[in-house]
Amino acid sequence: MQRIGISFSGDTVMRRIIGWILAALGGLLFTLALVAAMYVFWLSGSSHEPTGVRPASAYVSPGGPILVFGGNRGTGLEIVRGLRARGEQVTVAVRPTSDTRALREIGVATVLADAFDPGQIQAAFAAQRYAAVVSTLGGGPADKARRPDLEGNRNAIEGARAAGVRRFVLISVIGAGDSRATAPAPSRRFLETVMDLKSQAEDHLRASDLDHTIIRPGGLGDVKATGTAVLADDPRAFSYISRTDLADLAVQALGDPTTIGKTYNAYDPSRRTMWKMFND
Ligand SMILES: NC(=O)c1ccc[n+]([C@@H]2O[C@H](COP(=O)([O-])OP(=O)(O)OC[C@H]3O[C@@H](n4cnc5c(N)ncnc54)[C@H](OP(=O)(O)O)[C@@H]3O)[C@@H](O)[C@H]2O)c1
Image (cartoon, rainbow, N blue to C red; front, side):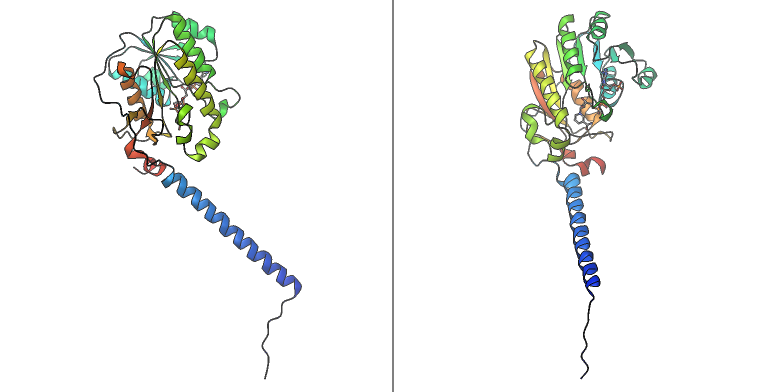
């Protein structure tokens, strides 16, 4: 009887073993990437039901011009639009490099005040008697070396105090202060510096004698507004949110004296996960 056998040379065996290892590694990497993508898109939100939701209220004007830091783009620009829609007189503090085209298009005044320059801020406050300040100051990846999240906000807060402006609304971030554990793990890992700086800016504002309101959003998107977002006096509340909805919440807070002294998490029940944010 003829024996059927398979014989491998040492070389072939090595090549096969390496092939199996590479295939196993590839499979493992693929599974990890899949789990990471699923986490980010579907599971990164929180199932916690917020408490302390701010009840809706009629808008009360601060009764004078409003100075907005960060108002030339993003959430700040939406806040400017919202304030103007309520008949407010708005000025935006900009730096020489700021793109102000959107503001020019809607006829909003600007004043030169780089948030890193206390002298310019002082001059901006001296130019007009403001009734309130809103700050959305934040930095992008390009500002890594020097971010305005603490330094810029601290200068704006001190500028307001020195000028006798009482009302201050600050946009912070979920992950600052007592909301650190609420932020999804990847955000805590990659936005740790921002969260630390914003925590310190929040503390600086709380320690001031200003009539402050702090609003912490989760992930922001230039996506359509849902109109379902609320402010929750609850550091465990988490969701994603459109910049337009966040801006609307900031304007509502400014116009609601019961928000003074409070720190809120912005929460949109329609956008609990990142998937919900980008899949409208
Ligand atoms: N992106 C998110 O997912 C996210 C999540 C949570 C919280 N937040 C926070 O929410 C806020 C709004 O975010 P956003 O993404 O809508 O806006 P943004 O892109 O962070 O806009 C930042 C604004 O700050 C201004 N700014 C920065 N440095 C300045 C300086 N030295 N002097 C004067 N102005 C300065 C910028 O002006 P220029 O145009 O001149 O740069 C811009 O108008 C920020 O505070 C951000 O940290 C963001």
